Length: 167
Image 1 (cartoon, rainbow, N blue to C red):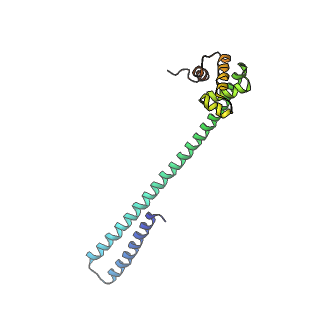
Image 2: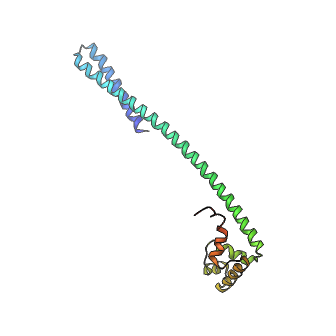
Image 3: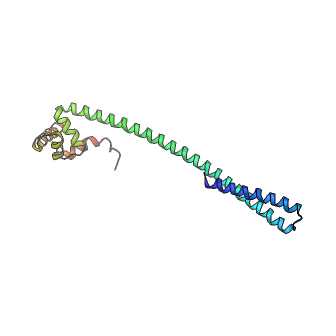
């Protein structure tokens, strides 16, 4: 149970008990100063309860707005993720088409993908269960067929279109 609800309940009990006491004091002809003190306690308890109720409603509305904003941002992220996935698919397709235009063999295409992903010759050799020398020869063939002079130029060739207008 929410602590504010507990406090509101306590204020309610204080108000009810003081109201009963005020009615009893009036019947017993207790001095009016004492009755005024109890009335003030009732009013303060009532004010405290009203303040907490108002504060809880304000926080609840704020929390609902935050939940809506989070939901909206999650939808935006989901849409962005979908757009990124589609962009990756289009990019991958464009790379595959370029590999075909360059007439890269299946093995060269595998090595080319790994080069684009940033793997070293040694890592590519381990992944493909081949010798590093073989990977270097395939990379050299890839560079020749693509008309570039090395690994950095090869990667840059695919990034150039994305970086137009930058810098």
